Image 1 (cartoon, rainbow, N blue to C red):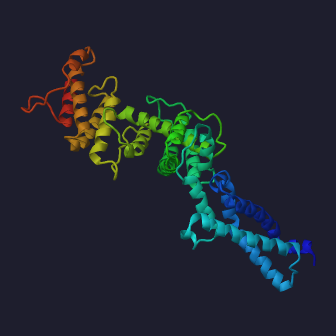
Image 2: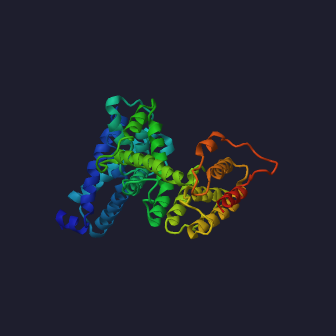
Length: 395
């Protein structure tokens, strides 16, 4: 048999060994040089590709050795010489990598040493000069890095949702399914962004690269990301933009109650449900106390005041019923800052609320805020009492 037959019987493994020979030769030359850190930093893709393909190379070498022994392949054949050269190069690169990494890497195989070399040359703190910042960012944030890939997937979720026009006074721009998908992607996306910024800050001894990327992340992406650094910048921009939009969409309906970030998706889900069912309730959870939910429900009802909430009118009766139920639930939050804000709002409503044929003296009510606490029972003080007083005034 000749070399062509050997290559055919190896089913593509000979070609795999030839690629490995080229890669290992280049790595051996880099690791021997004085500027080995800089040269490896410029060729981190070579480190990753070699490490990723090392298992397949070892499998190919094992197949060549087994078939050569079983079929008596001559040592002088091109396939056998190539396999021997690859094995020698792998041992040489492994030894050079051990020399650069130190004795702590002695138990590791070649693939693990190459992975650690990549971390060493990329994560090593250094001064990044102005002309090197974008190039360094692409080196530190390669598109194959898991955290960069997670950030890219996060941006792909955010961009189509938040490109839509959004007005707090209009209907929510999401369906429940879209909001649930966003809520599921949000924690992992935030962790991915935190991880990549930590990676950048770790190597940026003077902070110049971090500041440079933070400034670029403010700009709206103009095209699809072409590398890992652009994926991170797109994810950072859309994450920041989404955070502001979500806060705006949440805060406007429930003002003056403040919505904490962990509560946001639960409140948004309820606000979407409420668009088609005004009787929908905001459920309590581990992150949203029942009293807090009651305060938010009451705030939304106050912001959706019917034009003429008169006794006997079906729409007005339904609103008064909801307002009373929400006030009873919110009463559990007595003493909380948001409770006081709603109490002041209800007192203001009570002062300006007049029969429909009269003009509310708004300026007089505003001039008397904040209202002093009344303890002698001459004025209503609790949320429920204030709602009852408002209803009686409209009777």
